[in-house]
Length: 406
Image 1 (cartoon, rainbow, N blue to C red):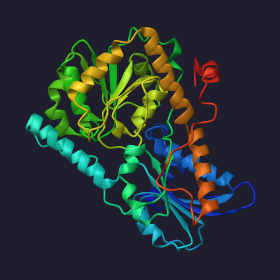
Image 2: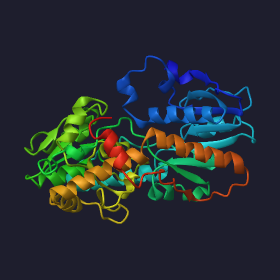
Image 3: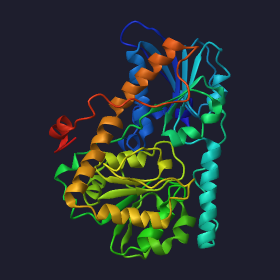
Image 4: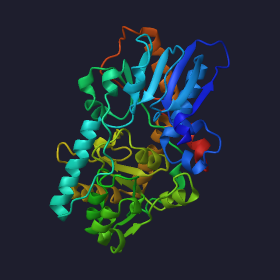
């Protein structure tokens, strides 16, 4: 594809301090990229925030596609920042002096693939059908080739990379769209309606478990939003739950940047997302931004407390089951309306203050400053958690600004 060989350059507004090679989603900078694509994944918001931050730091930035395997640098770069795909290939073509930073947005490929296939084995035992995983990651040795790493995820995600002894800096997953605060939402009315939202990789993301749970709870409603037609074997195996169960509605793919999704969010109380392996799940961030109460696994890569949702535990410890999903659903739905409103507003507030492009840019800027100032002898080691956003302890200004719109 033409964009895979694109080369786009940016110059800082002031004096140039150095030059960076960025391998990322190049379509974020190509004119004519449709808005529906730009809001389809957080990668677009990330790419723009990274370039903006680097330009403000005084760096010239050359952007190539993370899928570009033919690029050979012909000038000196102070930093190389790239997604995990093809990282080591380009890194080998750069001199030792170039600081190499890999951006990780998933669990390590070995862990991801093992977890996904183990879930497929569970489905085979339960359903007597062998289904393929659509989220197997290609092997990379990026963490082994990098001086530093940035990570979308939590400590559960980091544990899959700990073996590399590479300093890993946590980044927030920036939302692709901001939504109004749910302070005026009638949460008592919608307390029995939940949503599952996700892209391909339905077994890995626990849709089979969610379907099984709601099939046993006819008093609750579930709307399934995802490209079900892209996994026909899954659709066939779970046809009864998806299409013949009265309290389960399969919507299919939905544009989270569109009005239809906002309308749906207004009719639901929460998101159920029991993924077995992620970076920091964009579906969770999106739904929190929309004021939905999250019920998630620790492997989803997002840390929450009971002020805004429920953490199911982890697949590793066997605590994510159909029964635990049913219990969590009933626990949320059984809360008083005022408590539900507090949780929904807190979910929205945390998403607004933490999982925003602005905070992503601020955290990324701080990381680059620290790396450049300390390299090659960094004080950072292990997992470096991102700081709490300044001013996030209070939400009054957010509520005044955003109670009626974005």
